[in-house]
Amino acid sequence: MTSRFLQIFKPFTRITFEVKKPDRTVSFKEKSIWTIVCLVVYFILVNVPLYGVEKATGGSDPFFAMRAILASQRGTLGELGIGPIVTAGLIMQLLVGSQIIKVDFNNPEERALYTGAQKVLSVLMILFEAGAYLFGGAYGENISILTGTLIFLQLLASGLVIMLMDELIQKGYGLGSGISLFIAAGVSFTILNGLFGFTEGIRNPAGRYYGAVIAFFYGLTHGEKFINVVYRPDNPDIIAFLATIIVFAMVIYVESMRIEIPISHAKYKVPARYPIKFLYTSNIPVILASALFANVYFISQILSKKIASNPIVELIGKWDFSGDQAVPTGGLVYFTTAPRGISQVVNDPLRAVIYIIILIIACMIFSAIWLETAGMGPRDVAKQLLDADMQIPGFRRNPKVLEKYLERYIPIAALLGGFFVAILAGFADFLGALGTGTGILLTIGIIKQYSEIIAKERMAEISPAVRGFLGLQ
Image 1 (cartoon, rainbow, N blue to C red):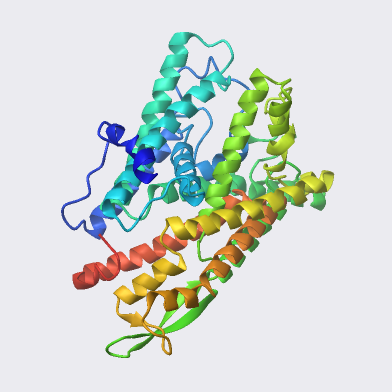
Image 2 (cartoon, rainbow, N blue to C red):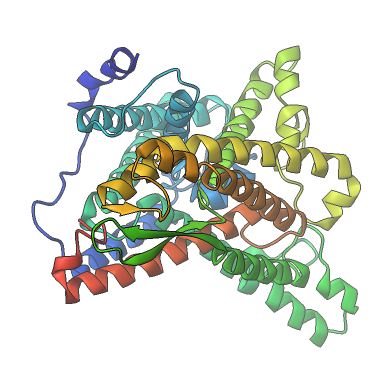
């Protein structure tokens, strides 16, 4: 099944743009420069408006609730953000996890074919989402063919640039992952804007400043009631600020929780410990769950505009298009969009309960799937330990024995980790945390990953001999 399905994409992989792996060791300084360059280009893309949008902009934003985690910005060259890349990855994960296709990730040829297929699918998703934005009326219902074509080409070009920058960083020219870098940058900008935004263009209708900190001190110095400066429905406030700090603190604490399995070298009997983190699959489950919800949100809005009276479309989602921003009012999309802030939760507690249940189930399922597709399952870890001449004291050096032992811990850690990140992300949204609960969760994990990557790179520069041991290119 693997060959048949993935071979379909093989001819197209030859015509897609590709970043070649470096044929030399890239220094830490050079990686840092490339990473900064990609970050600067990303910020340019999300701040330069699309040509032709001013006279053809529609009122609603199809991805309003998902902007932070998709690293995108409405009406700019970065409109699509990392959405097409994450969606392509999600589709491939689901195909592998459901055993529709089978891939041996230990086989270099099959792994390369899988990666190539995912890249082709990313390009197709860029084309699809760019067309869907136009078809769905995101830039107006009556735009000319010329304006529509120009917008489509801009979205296509910028989508390819973001995809290639992600590949450039992942191939070893930069640090970490482009997707992670852009998410962290987008969420950080959202948080800072929510705290300190005070320009004339982003004041709320009541005339008070937008940023939570700015509005707080503005209110105190202008004689407003304390409750009105602490709690501001539908605007960043001090409650949201405190919720953001609490989420940061909880994730940092939980990141340090782990089970350490005693291991030793088979020949030299040097004792060591193999850590299994509580957040074993990190923030991957919540990324995939959010991507799934974002696509339900997007597709439902387009279908509701075109065939609103269809019962199946209404089952997926019902919408209110009367205001400047389209709002889900029923169906599946209503329950997969987080109620933001205490007021929305109080007004519809059932929605909050159903949303958190769906998010928990999705994160736990994606966590289990990720174990297999990312080579983090008991079988893969057992093989890695044996290949490194390591063993668990008191157990035979047999892959089946080691796998059975690791099955006591790894699957449970993955499921519990998926459960926890879903709970944390959901309740952060309920409190109106800045940058969204999912965005904060991802950003903390990404910052931690980057601190580890930088530490490894610095160590490798001091002692180049340990580069292979640290898993660096």
